[in-house]
Image (cartoon, rainbow, N blue to C red):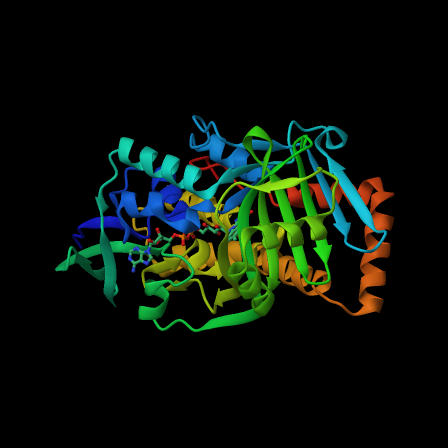
Length: 398
Ligand SMILES: Cc1cc2nc3c(=O)[nH]c(=O)nc-3n(C[C@H](O)[C@H](O)[C@H](O)COP(=O)(O)OP(=O)(O)OC[C@H]3O[C@@H](n4cnc5c(N)ncnc54)[C@H](O)[C@@H]3O)c2cc1C
């Protein structure tokens, strides 16, 4: 059967664009459908969030020739994990683990625009701005209806990849049920400058009111991800910058001296969304479209990129990329990593946002014990570096 494309990718965010780049030399005919113009993407307040990328993720991006040319990433050389008001703390260091960096921090906007530019350079066709508004799957093809500049357009493909984010239209059009956990929390995101050098240290501080992460960025700035209950977050957003900064400083302490706000505050309400299944007739969901996580453990895009790598590896060798066998194989390969990463993130949120004193004592004892156990620390470091799971190289022979 003749299709317009072998693979249509709905969503040109990080997951969709990285998949297109991973498949660019596969011989498959690919196109991307993206709702936002490059200008809208550049101006989106959501681009202000910083992403902590595990060393394993950066290795994968290097293998895919995506990381090369990125100039604004900051290496994480140490991770300092502590519990406010309690004694427990642990530290991980790249030196102890024998690696150059435990991970890297980059603004979402910088990596998104870099990846989008590579897609353009590679000449991968894009329908943009265009939205997927309808789907109809047959045995041999999927028919996709778009709205491009308010005009309808119909395309067909052997496979549709839904990479259209946490609010995925593809998932909704297929009526795939989703499990939603509302943590009742909002992530407040901003940037600070610290009086003392951050020395490439990432801080994760668990507090009674929620976790606070300070991630090192360029020129001694740190990107702040401060998770608070919705009401507290609303009050912190409604108050003045001076009040916000005073509360932030109180929560973090003075290890880095005085902090100064250096970018606007943004608020992201947090929910865990997991689609009940990741495949349908000639459709596969990847990235946030299938799993949107709480950012506490910084796993969202790290997990999404592992979807990309595994799917690209599988599709490279397929004459028909949308058969039930191919999609079933993909789903079986990905399930364990999804289960493990979602459970790790969900447990971290629940244990470390809990005010119950006994639990606080256990987690403190845990952090202190961990600090004295080199093997356990190595395991934690491997998790932080995204090395726990080994993935095949794209295009390699199986
Ligand atoms: C505060 C915060 C901090 C985070 N920190 C980290 C971190 O430290 N480390 C980490 O790994 N992850 C982190 N994440 C998660 C990370 O940002 C996401 O996992 C990642 O950006 C998801 O990429 P995606 O391509 O799957 O989805 P998205 O980035 O949402 O991209 C989806 C794309 O699809 C397009 N689209 C939507 N609907 C349609 C449609 N109908 N038709 C066509 N196109 C459509 C959208 O315009 C968008 O471009 C964080 C998230 C937040 C909110």
